[in-house]
Image 1 (cartoon, one colour):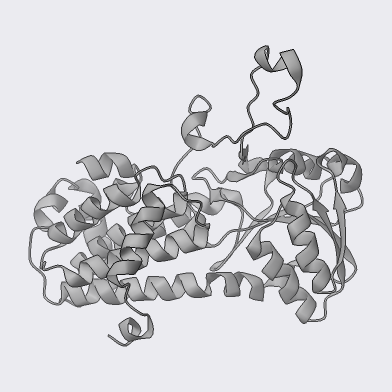
Image 2 (image 1 turned 30 degrees about the vertical axis):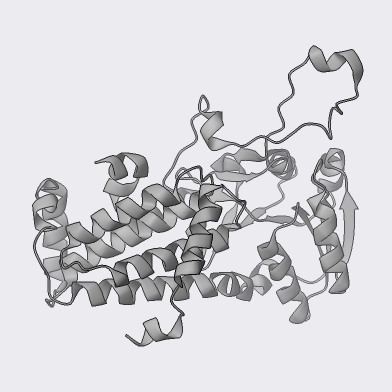
Length: 359
């Protein structure tokens, strides 16, 4: 239980504040939402009395309904899936030593006799609770170091005297650039300002203070400036199951311009952003989120206000054929490989999380 001691437990007051933020759909960052979700579930699993995997899974389902209420941040659901897979994996491995051959036989058996899992999860296992808590502590440690590991590989992607384009204000992208500069790389960054919230100006200020040569351009100048760039490096909100992206509005335009000029598009994506969800073109309400368009069309624009309907989405979907590489905390991967990572991180029964929680 050494890992458990390395991370502080969540107090009752902290848990209540976290739940309040989640229920009010406050805009937590992807990392904070993921980390606090795992920490909260670990506390509940640790404090509760249970001895069977089914009891632990039911406990997670009960708490997950509160965590997901009104929440659009996909990393919350991703961490719930990770925790459920930990419980299932530890159930099958707890209390016995397995050879590789036996693992393969049991995996094939589970595929053919999936219905038997429900009965199997009701079987008590020795030291199951301790094993689950240890694995959740390892997951917290993985989350804590994910950004650092991604940034440690910055020299593999950034060479001297390169011109790199990015968009908006991603804290991971900022840290990625600063790590490269600290390792004596010299390069220039062109930042798309990301109208109408102008978050690109925030990133430009941070990079300028780190002595990185920075230029801010309007969204309309993306195509014109792309021919001067060596590569594009961006962050993302989510990595979809097909290898596509859910990223800041304007990213699709950026990716199309990069494709036209054959400029590599590198996406910084820690594994907690990988989701088994797909985009349905008819289901934009669940995929996207809109904000007030008053920056684009002010309320004092006269009679035109009553004649038009203006949508101002926060996110774009970027198809996988526009992405060159995903730089993750476990290595670099091409979009077609994403489906393999899903099988490693999540149990297939948990892909449709809402259906699983209602079962």
